[in-house]
Structures are given as C-alpha cells and as structure tokens.
Image (cartoon, rainbow, N blue to C red; front, side, top):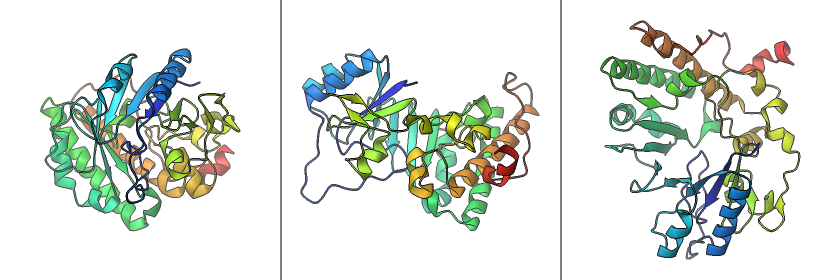
Length: 312
C-alpha cells in the first residue's frame, strides 16, 4: 500500500540514496519541475493520502514555488542545511546540524573517515551513512567494515553512558525495529520526476527516463507490482536484518531481479545486524534499555542465501 510520494523538484535534485546520478551534459541547464506539474503531483498525493517528500536541487527555487510547496504537509530533503528536514552532504568533516544528516560516500572514504564519523555522532541527532559502491565490496572490505562498525559501537555505548542519545543507521536502527524497514520503492513509495512521470524510485529515473511506471495524466501502471512486496521476496521475507536498505534498483542492477539482493548487499546488512546485536547486549549490561525490544538472536551466516534450503 502506497504511503509516500517523493517529488524531485529538479532533474539535478540531490541524490539521497546509493545512486550517483549521471551529470548533465556540459552546457545543459537544470530542469526545474513545471509549477503546474508540481501542483498536479501534490493533488495526486492528497487524493491518495500520501506523505510528500520534496527533494531539492542545490539552488534556491523561485519564490512562487514556496507557496505551492507549503500547501501540504511534507518533509524537505536538501543539499543545504537551512530549512532541511534531512540534510544530504558529501562531506563528513566538521559536520554539525540539528537535523538528520545523510552522508553519501564510497567505501574508501568511509574507511578513511573513522574519526570524522565519531565526531559527527556527537554533533548531529542522526547520521545516515549511505554507500554508493556496495557492489564493489570484497572479502577484505567486509573485514574492514566489520572493524569499523565495532569502533562505532564502542563510541555509541560510551555516549549512551554519558547520557547522549546518538543514532547511526548502520547500528542503532536494527535495535529499534521489529520488522523490515527498507525504502519500500515500488510498494510503499513512488517517485514523481520533473517530466510528470512516475518511477519506482529516483534511481530508475536517473538511469533511464523511459523506465517509468505511469504519469500524472493516466495514473500508475506498475508491471508485476507484487514483486516489489516483501511477501514475494523468497529470501528477504525470512531475513531479520531489518535495517537492510534492500535497494530495489541495486537488486535489479546486480541480480536482474527487483526482489533479490546481491551477495554484497546481504553481507553488509548482516555485518550491521551482528554489530547491532553486540551493541544492544553491551548497553543492556549498564541497565534497562529498550525493554520492549526482543533480543537479537545469534546467527551462523552472513548471507541468507546460504540458508535457502531451510526456507525455500
């Protein structure tokens, strides 16, 4: 069931997930969503009772857009801090904010930024780390990732003892979830692009504008829409790495199936899950913590595909 409508306000709207949009050809101007298209998108959202998320470009919009944008409840995803509900940045150094921050990074920058990330955990209410090159991870990278998560967990535990509530999506999300909480692209979430067409998520639009799932004039037309639902994901529906991004676009790119994640995506998610388990157990040694949440069970695998004979 649809719950969210993402509206890209420009073709150059900031990317807040793992996809890095291709830059516009040299000399090509940005493509701001026509005001009438924006109004129609808002009307669609109101009729369908959807929460709207506006995704901004890196420039100030014309004044006449503000009134239309503010005509309905929404959240703002911006590449600048001012006025954002979620601030997307490409730099983690010396970062401070009173809103949730999304840091998009490749693995090498992540591995080289341990100190900056630890500092950010003390200066932002929530930090979402989004990797842009998941499919390139190797066994060595997985070990580096494991070590990094352990370092972050130690610091988050220290902050907790100091009375500071710090959220890092890679670790603290799994502790708080009781079911899978991925982006829901194509199921609970769809995207409206500046051309007036709907897409499974922004990545599908940036990769191929012809790969739409309907438009404002004719409505939605999602082919095989059941495949975007968890019930039709033979591996994911048995998995309890509930913080996993389960990126539909990356699934299709790496496995050719929208409902089947790649090995790399699964291993990263389970490294996070296991580190979350240790963090939760360690914090609970100091007193009552998240008493309503069940213990995260110990497992003997990192890729649920290895357990397929048990589930399928």
